[in-house]
Length: 188
Ligand SMILES: Cc1cc2nc3c(=O)[nH]c(=O)nc-3n(C[C@H](O)[C@H](O)[C@H](O)COP(=O)(O)O)c2cc1C
Image (cartoon, rainbow, N blue to C red; front, side, top):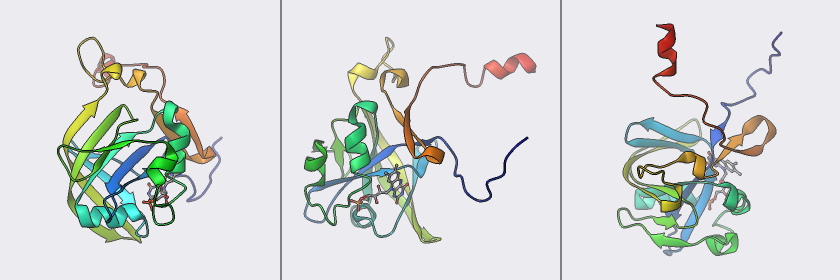
């Protein structure tokens, strides 16, 4: 038997993306965003509330970075999702995070996170009360500590968080249990 919940749940798990931008005065800002993801091979889509400082920053700077929240920085990652730069001008500092300018786009890289994607905005559209933003990936940088022997990113070493929306919880990405585009071949 299945239980129906009506139009309640959203897709779960969701990523815990940390979107970093520059405020008008040049200070870095970051926010937590679960409603976002890869929408093409080199593009990332975000759904942002129109009142966030981040949304205004993206409209003005046409750039943002996306880091993956990890277990080590869980409290700071939640904090940047609770407090707006509109009311806390030292948001990054208060979170205990550190930022440096991206070499590729006009947006900060939060150096505490092990994996960051740098994007330039290619499309922005207001729809159903949200700002739909699409960014083109211009660079991805990763700490050496999360690379495997071949030099590729090993998600298992990141302690990456996912957002468990039904319970409003954070979980850690775990065990690798299969091979994509491959394991299903046995049924062909
Ligand atoms: C787990 C979590 C997920 C969130 N996901 C989103 C999201 O996808 N889109 C959004 O607009 N706000 C989202 N928020 C809320 C923003 O992160 C929050 O309003 C933040 O304070 C905005 O900061 P800013 O005004 O400095 O940009 C989320 C918050 C949390 C805690």
